[in-house]
Amino acid sequence: MSDFYGQLERQLVDAGRRRAERGRWRPMAGRGRGRLAVATAALVLLAAVVLVPALRSESARSPAGSAAPPAPPGAQRDVSLRGISVAIFNATTTAGLGRAAADVLQRREASVRGVATDIDQDRARSVVEHRPGVATQARLVADVLGVRDVRPLSQASSRQAGADAAVVVRLGADHRTP
Amino acid sequence: MDPPATERSDEELLAAARAEPEAFAVFYRRHVRALSAYFWRRTRDAETTADLAAETFAAALDGCARFDPTRGPAIGWLYGIAHRQLGTLARRGTVEQRARRRLGMVRLELDDAALERIEADAVREGPQARVLEELAGLPAEQRAAVEARVLHELDYAQIALAAGASEVVVRKRVSRGLAALRGRLGRDEG
Image: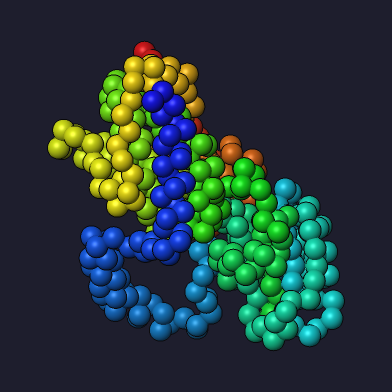
């Protein structure tokens, strides 16, 4: 057997097929579960000792999913979004919201691949979703629009957005055009 | 419609691998030679290199459901697995086979021609493999800054905003990251 790489690839594909047919994937190894339990306990302790007093002094303002410090809408006026492809969905019944956001992004050189009305038109909070590997670009878009919730793209969102957009913006009722 | 597998990012390929074995095959073809070069440089043995590469990709396939793109790029995750395989080899003196067994993969027996080819590929892939490997080994903030600047070609203002840091800090991270890469890459050549 002289084609090691080809043979190994065939083995992996066959193994992947068997797993896909059985639907048996390992979400977390045993040792990982133990580590997760310890890490969770440590985080709870940390929250109790350090974070809770700090949060008490602050109004609840940052929803889960955001990794970057929030910026007020329009605060980063000089930041270029060149090379970032974005799809925008208006998830409200307010007409023109998506187009206005598209104008804001295009003024910063973002490549807006589409503006559409979302299936869900009753979204309260805006969210910026992104394909794997482009979280940095997504946070830039979020900062320009003043969106605090940044998260990986779900499979459903990915299908809806199509292949062109790396970043997807869903505008909710909380959105104010910068 | 999703893009063709060859145009997807590593992270997208891993996310799709559970349902599409071909997606993992693309990820494999993209990295197997560089990863083999990484192993060969450390072991100087083609048979051990092949064994380590097989077990690493088996472990990656077996654990692809656990890959979390928000914690870092797929390449860093893959080399993390590779690093652990080397650790097991150092401790036990033998290459782990657990992931291959779980997946029902037999150990491949290699003839002289296959071993020579692995060695030749490793020599040819050396420089690229080293850059990826050393990049994955940088501290997280430096790695993210270098990737954003060099691979994604973002400007410093963009990176600074996304990182929640000043441009001065980001420039330092990129500068230090590149200096560390240069130092590490030049270390074995002197």
